[in-house]
Each structure stands twice: as C-alpha cells, then as structure tokens.
Amino acid sequence: MVLAYHLVLSAYGFWLPNDPRGSCSDFVGSKELFRFGKARKVDSRESTAHVEHDRQWRMAAKQSLKYPPVRFSGVQARAVGRGFAKAIEDLRVTNCACAMMPDHVHLVVGRSAHSIEDVSTRLKSEASRKLVDESLHPFDELRNSAGDLPSVWAEGEWKVFLNSPEAITHEIQYVEENPIKAGLKPQRWSFVTRYVPY
Image 1 (cartoon, rainbow, N blue to C red):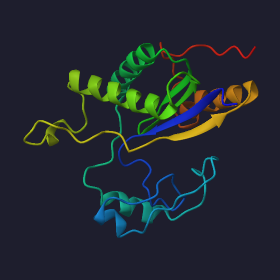
Image 2 (image 1 turned 60 degrees about the vertical axis):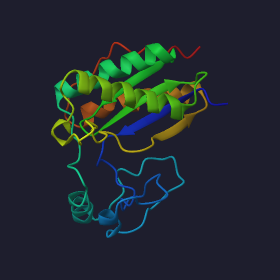
Image 3 (image 1 turned 45 degrees about the vertical axis):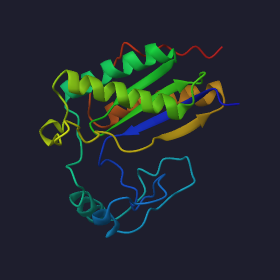
Image 4 (image 1 turned 180 degrees about the vertical axis):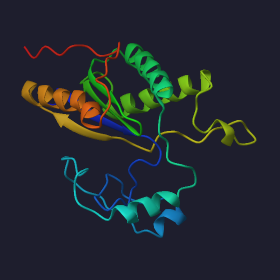
C-alpha cells in the first residue's frame, strides 16, 4: 500500500523529454527540440540523474527551447514556498520534506484523499500565483496580448511510491541532503511536518 510519495517538480527546461538519461515523457512537443531526438521514456523509478551522458548534447538541446530554462533565485524560491504552503494547507495534505533547488523541487508528500497528480498541479498553480502576485515571475516580460504568461513549470511530475516507513525515512533524508550536496545551505520550510514512523 502506498503511504507517501517522493515528488519531483521540474522547472521549465530542467529535464527535457529527450534527455539522454531518459525521462518520464512519451513525446516531444516542440519541433525545435525534436531535432535532438524523440522522447526517451524510462520505466524505472530510480533516479537517472548521475547516469553518464553527452552533456554537450543536453546543453545544446536546452538552447533550442522557446524560453530560457528557469532557475529560481532565493527570493523566487521563497515565493514558491509560500505558494506550496497555501496548497498544502488548502488540500490538507502532509508534507514531510522539501528541497527547493534552483531548477527543480523535491517533496515527500503523504497519501491523502487527493491523487498525487492533483496535489502536484495545485502546488505548481499556487506557486505560480505567488510569483505573479509578488512580481517575481521569471517570464514576466513575456506576457502575451491577453496577459498570459508561459509556465515556469515543466508538464507533469516525477513520483516515486513509498510503501513503508523505512522508505519514507530514506527519501526524507535524501531530500534534506539534496541542497547540501549541491553546495547550498540546509533548508527549513514552515509547511514541512516532522515524520513520525510509528
């Protein structure tokens, strides 16, 4: 039985559908990006982030994107966190860990009455709303004639199903260590609830 999820939300341009390390995507929607190959779907839920690959190819593919890849500043990350806090409160879900990286976010979310896909959508929606409300949206200068903005998020989410207290504890530790391994400071978020396994 699923008890929780390790949820990864990618900012726009972070992990491409045809990334040489694989992805969770079935197709490449951009003609420009398709020049670099079709989607490379993998079925494994293990991270492929450290798989050896052609880094130059990956960087060249990112240059073909319609917009520049999003990298949240510290101020923007705090706004995203405020959006997450609202979504978590409104949905009444439990979140046991969060690592806000410049181009993606890791969370450990408890099972709830909502599907993890709905939780993901709401987290991204509230975070985007906060970025707009606080005049921090990375694509603010790219509004179209109707006033709409490109999304700062990639479509979908990466989710790992956690079926035991041990798995949850392991993923929480992984998430908490993520910023430190990247040379960032440890993170504390108001919407994170301490996990008590038993």
